[in-house]
Image 1: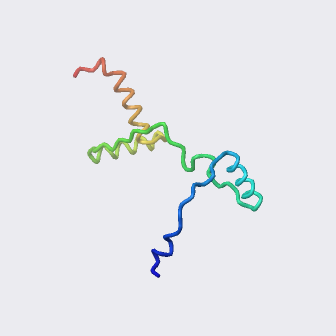
Image 2: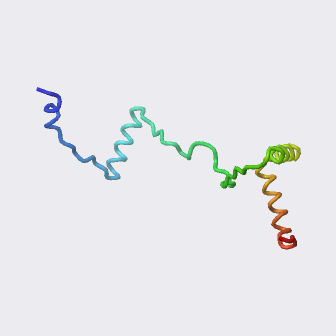
Length: 97
């Protein structure tokens, strides 16, 4: 008898999914030491409100200057770029293009 014939008589049976049956099974499991291990909250770091990443290509001197200024101010390069954009946006109406 080959392996496939041994399983031929098995049939799938639907599991009982009523609320009462699920509660009963949970009680029996807890009484025997099985605990619910599903995570209570989403694991990992909380998402940042800053979700748009930029990776601008700049000349080395400009990149070094941005990095140095951000470090001097004690902020990230992204925060420095946000500040520069705010200044640009405020003055955009007065600048000659």
